[in-house]
Image (tube, rainbow, N blue to C red; front, side, top):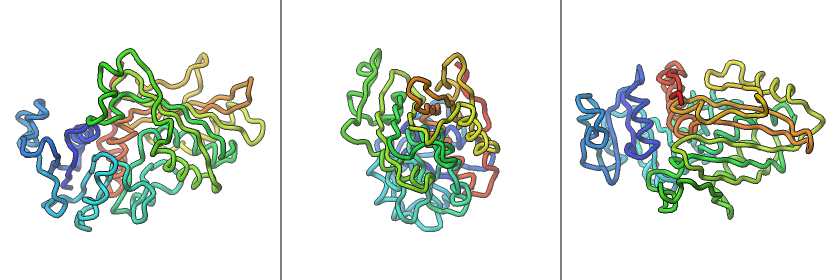
Length: 330
């Protein structure tokens, strides 16, 4: 299957490049970009010197000129993909890693492990990848809502992300000097992931979900930890929470359910370079609040690896193809 990647030199695009080149079925046939247009791929990625893909020229993205591409990954900043992707020929399947098509008519929301999502993605030609923060928060919360263990309103999501989550073209306050030895919250006045998370959680719960979401930037390259607080519908134990998640995710190849160890949750470093999600559950005995955490790689399950998982389903190949490598050990 011939694969194209638009935005190949961005953080998400370069992770897609790494995964596609290691995929047993996909063949990279097209790379697109803006500032890098006209350059050989091995000029931007020197490790590709001598590799057949290294000779590919990064092209300015013209949607009508994709050649023999069968499936296109679009890794463009939010606000930049809706118009050009509308001009991509219908024969070309698309996974949009950006934020322009989540819960948009004609596009399938592609967080595969949510109820009903896998079958929908398998039959889709236009898939909207989930946002990185939503992937980290929705996965631990979905089983609790589906089993009626927590209230769908008043959920609080406190999430920390590595700096790559801001994108390579991020604002100057997301640079190394500004983020090193510092942690700060942002998006306090409103964040574009809030409607996405509320829409997804409402579908799972069967009633309106309302969340409070605060993202933070922490001085690491990659990884997201989402700590979610919710009111239980009745007295609930840690074991009941873990049982609900294990029941829903028993056959999921990329979900790992871990019990808190000495009061600690999953680590983001466990996920680096992978499509894995580690989920942890507990109950705060003092307040009675449910605490659900999700740890993912924002460039993996939060972006490129999830996109490849979706593409595998769309292409009719093994869902885990190209995604079975072990994480990068600390």
